Length: 193
Length: 227
Image (cartoon, rainbow over all chains, first blue to last red; front, side):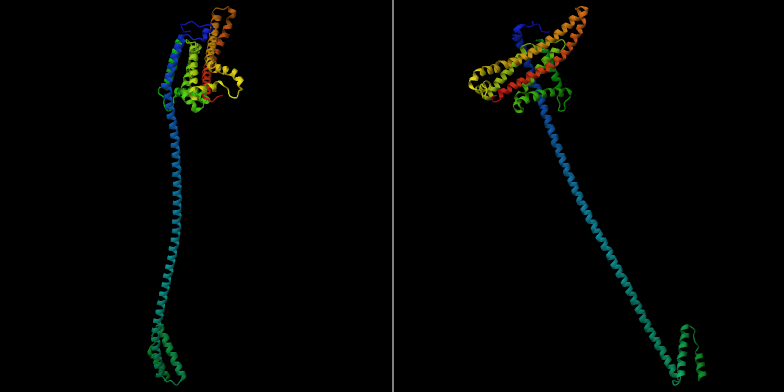
């Protein structure tokens, strides 16, 4: 035992001597002062700070989460909107395409119709021209034929038909491109005359 | 009483080292100290008194708990070998502190008259019984509670000390001075010494806990409206 005092005996065990009181009071006071002035305030401050920080952290986390959710919702809304717009554009494009095709087809048809009509008209004109020239020619020929017929004797019917046949033959030959000498005609006329 | 100064120094040094650089994110030492302080605050004081009422007294009970624990543990520290609490002075002083505290708190909360009535007159008892009960309650409040607080602690620590001394003196004597036949018995007493040393560590914590818990309970009686 490190104490210099005698070990108390009997009832003395339970009745502390003055020095016991004194030292007890001293150490208790020292410990109490240390706890009250240093340890507890310091640790309490730390604990409060920690609690505040944790609460702050939780609040921050909640805030961040809310912001993230909001951002996500916004993104989704934007995406939806973009999709709608894209769908609209696609529909419009399809409609436009169909319109363009229809227009092109209409134009082509009109053009075709126009070309056909022009062709018809041209053909008509040519036909008309052909008719006019033919008529002139036929008129000339008829006149010639008539003058020949008149030149011959018109009484004989056989003669008449012979003249017409000869005229047609000449005509055919002329059309064939082989010029018929007028002598032949004269010969024939002489034979018959 | 030199032991007490050493223990005080050691306790304060240890705690100071642990929380000197107290940080938000605690190190090992700081965590251990916080855990110990939390144990006193939550397990003993707040559970007994309730969170709100406990607030003004947490400091006091913390001081009491740590003082007793440190002084008790001195009993198993080599070269100190005696608990600071195994002499009457310190336990008596702490008990008186608790005693005065609960008297003052009780009187201040309810007024002296009402506090005495609350403490001394059990409700719902027929009046003739009060003749018997009031002295008993008075004895209880003014004598038995503080005295038992101190005595329980002193007796435990002193008994532990005596057991340890007995074991080690026995071992010493049996090994060095006894007949050859008796020497093996020394091994037995030595083993007992080890066991009792460990037991004393347990008792040191237990007695600190009991003293603090009962103090809190007594204070709770003083705060309550009658019982």
